[in-house]
Amino acid sequence: TTNFVQNVNLVRALEGELARTISSISNVENARVHLVMPRQRLFTREQEEPTASVVLKMRGNNRLNSNQVLAIQHLVAAAVPGLKPIKVSVIDSQGNLLARSAQEAVDGG
Image (cartoon, rainbow, N blue to C red; front, side):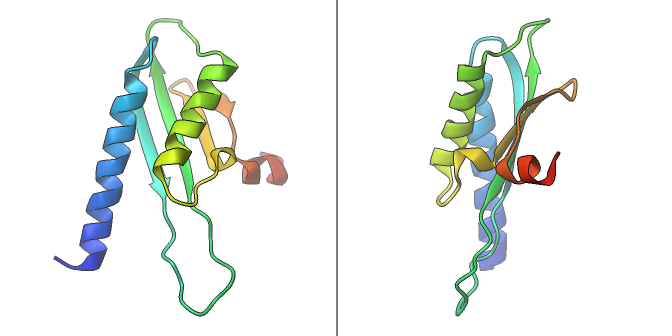
């Protein structure tokens, strides 16, 4: 397999493991994690930073508190080299924004 295929498989595996870990948090029924890991470019100083988004399906009408949402951001960031917690967006399956990335805040999102 090529490096590209290996990298895609690695990202998918990481997304799956993170989703399973997040799903183990009480009141979270299911989680999906999407990672955007830009390719590293040689001979350039400006590298794009990785970002992530997490979609949570909650059990019943349960909600997470702000500390739990922050913990999810830190968990995802700790698993991805160069990913900052502020670059992890978290929403619920109803489309409610629980934590937005820094870029969305700057853009007025």
